[in-house]
Length: 168
Image 1 (cartoon, helix red, strand yellow):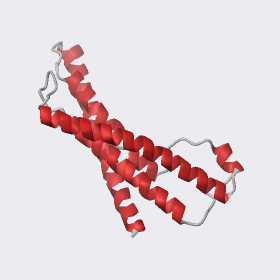
Image 2 (cartoon, one colour; image 1 turned 180 degrees about the vertical axis):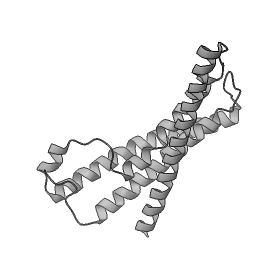
Image 3 (tube, helix red, strand yellow; image 1 turned 90 degrees about the vertical axis):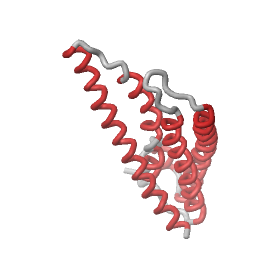
């Protein structure tokens, strides 16, 4: 059961990261268009800066769970190398607990911001796009990250200690 949930969250993490990558491609094309319009055509597009800035929030957060899935967060490996299998398991659990605590805090803030933006009907200044559309993907990414970290914590605590990192 736990393995099925973990695999489902890992698939969702891949899709969220793909959405983040797509947003980055859109930003790249849009910024390039803005530079072309400003410096080649001499007619700057006033929407480029706001649109690409608004897209930064979801793009920054959509890869969180994927980075956890790929074990891509930085680590101090000399400490991990010095520990035995049980010590590595405890350190991995502590690390996941810290991720969960931070994830819960930011998940609450992101979800609350999404609902407040929706309820208030606030929109971006120039484009007049609803702000909740920019908060919602980030809030979703934070919630998925936090739940995934929780599932990983349960998985780490329920499995026998195994060396996670081999010294070179």
